[in-house]
Image (cartoon, rainbow, N blue to C red; front, side, top):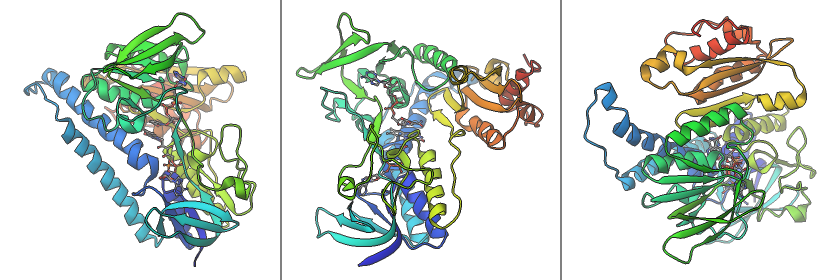
Length: 467
Ligand code: FAD
Ligand code: NAI
């Protein structure tokens, strides 16, 4: 029977990164994965394929709308959706193979199959086509991720009523796409299909998009998406979908109650959140505690209530983000190797990869107000940034929130070109406990979009130069 120092269940960004770091630190490591390929939700049906389609659909849209203004005359683009899907699939395949390579390079054993924890340090790996095998280990890290939250009363068939998974493989562009949920998935995948020609309506339960993101950013984002052709029905809930006819009939109601309305759709994307995935792990029998939302309860060291069993990533509390899972994977591996692994939950960036991008790190204005923290705001629009101006990507702004007494940066919120890359500077600054003055006094190359971050930091002290 194979015996290890560590067995990681699940090979998403949490699991595979944990395995690599533990192997680097000298542990004998194995991973168990029930999906046919490694890489988890992120690489197979999440971050990577969605970004491939966002990239390709943006190129399609640009070719049709932005090229001529630069004097690049091309015939009106035509869409070869099958080819675009191949582009996506090849990108996924390349990334997945990268994880295979990392497992080999770090001498990590890969057990294909579904893991069940049968006792302390005991894991059974089951496969459809072979007898189960048992492995023993000193420590277990559960990194089984998350799954789609269903909409009560609605059956997802992944053809006409789809989750994000089906929305990544639609065989043709829907005429009308109704998106249930104005969160990250709805707006990213809604953008993909909108750019390819779908008429997109987003039905959101709350009175705003992207709950949790800075309110001013979310408002501006909604305006920009509306200009791009999105329709929004906020403070509205979907109460049922009739799929008996050739056109889907989506019944909605005001969230607070009221008269029902019916929207017609060719495809409905249900994107109302994700929930932790623990099915089949045998947690009840070994006594691992879950919280009210089904997440595995862990302490500050990712330990569950059962000795020797740890958990990280989407399956525990915190933002469901790949980089959060990765950093937890590194931290728990270091803890298991006797080091002091740690994740700073105050500085986890969040990015929406639309056009323009939306990015955020640290506290929002709403959070600071609720906590009674006095803060100063520095804001700088991309209309006043030379590079954005010349590129004609001037929508959006950078907002720096700094402590009124100490000037320490508490949050940075960006909507605009390359916001997802720009936010890294803010994250590094915050990790080092920077004041807005530190960013303001740092020389930023010209002409770059990053100058907007510097100018927003200057604006905290009302001394932005280009505004
Ligand atoms: P997962 O990636 O979910 O991996 C868990 C793995 O465990 C799976 O492969 C599963 O098969 C396996 N598993 C489960 N149970 C068992 C078992 N019993 N035995 C063996 N294996 C098992 N995040 C970002 O940061 N940026 C993005 O751009 C982004 N885009 C996204 C787009 C979409 C459409 C979706 C759905 C998600 C996106 N996310 C994004 C979120 C990101 O995918 C998750 O936060 C991340 O994958 C979580 O990593 P994880 O390691 O915790 O779990
Ligand atoms: P989400 O939590 O971002 O958004 C769900 C939205 O649906 C919310 O606005 C919520 O108010 C709304 N909602 C909930 N119930 C509803 C109902 N019955 N009717 C109408 N609206 C309803 O969840 P989403 O978009 O499904 O994404 C899941 C997770 O995946 C997120 O937590 C996110 O962190 C992660 N993800 C991250 C990405 C990124 O980092 N770029 C991209 C895609 C997903």
